[in-house]
Image (cartoon, rainbow, N blue to C red):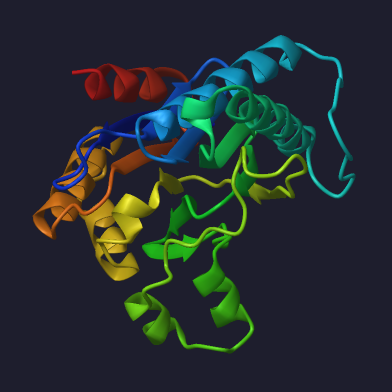
Length: 267
């Protein structure tokens, strides 16, 4: 399955710096968005540590071998388990770095990651950075937020409408670097022709509603166009946080037609 992908990160209209980070490695089939926290640039340290460690780990094991860290879930793919293992390694490294450097105390990061192989996307996440799927014009949120408000909605304590107005939306219940042991949620997603994936930090979905995201992805078929437009719209609504978007489009194109498509997409 052919993939075209693009990503962009922006500091937004309010924050003085950007603590988000993204990774696109088409050779590995690895897509990652991380949203750092902690302020004073240590959030930036955490998000970039997470991405660098995850890329290095996946790269070393991409050719084979199963040096897993932690438990293996036999119900999901090898690539989903690799992501979880790499995130556990990054969590430990960030936790130890924060403990050893007073300037980094309290730093952490969310992460959402996709590892692609043979039409299957292994998915892993911790925190409130999200993965969306646009299929047949319908947008689905694939990952569930690990946040206090999201948990309250799941338990029926508050409604989804009340959650949008909550002052506790930024309280995260899972993040790398905050605890020695981190529970990571993993799953598999079988891709089909025409699917589009969006990985994003909450600076996007916190400003732009799901129906608007669906409409914008539908209106801009090329990933680069879609990413730039999503960032612009989030900033036009106030851009209160750092904003990151990675959009990947998938096609079952082969041979001569596929070559032409790739040529035109490169311009």
